[in-house]
Length: 205
Image (cartoon, rainbow, N blue to C red; front, side, top):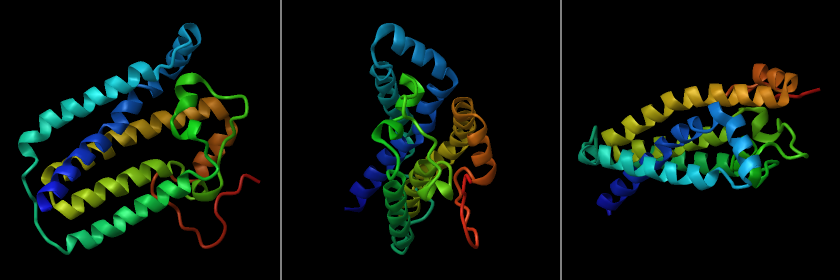
């Protein structure tokens, strides 16, 4: 059982760790992807998704020799892992509220914004600008904490570094799309670590 948990943890962290790299293929070139979609009438995801899967394979092959190295082994660590798993799932659920599947899938970045697209700043997004990335981080930390695998911790650190770059680029893209309202929102709400104010959260009014 433990062997399978460690295998799943490694593969999960492989996939999660490539998410920032996937978005780094999109955000700096958002206008080009939109132009490609308009001119070819084909979704850029037909190219992007295979490239992302190729990243999984490359990272898995690169890290496979290291996947059985433990920093520690402790049953109690799964208690912390369980709490992180629950937190991540809760954040995923809250993130889906007031946010369309199109937005969650990043369609505006590659297909262009829809005519009814709005800047969502309520719910969990009144506390944190990028809750989905926070949920990803909770899940990676959960697998890392529970298994104690060195490679999971290393992939989590890699995702945090590349994720910081990705968030800066995504913020720039959102500022370009929404203008002053997003700039005001960005000044008021942190990117990933939620603010817990004494009273009200972000209010665009």
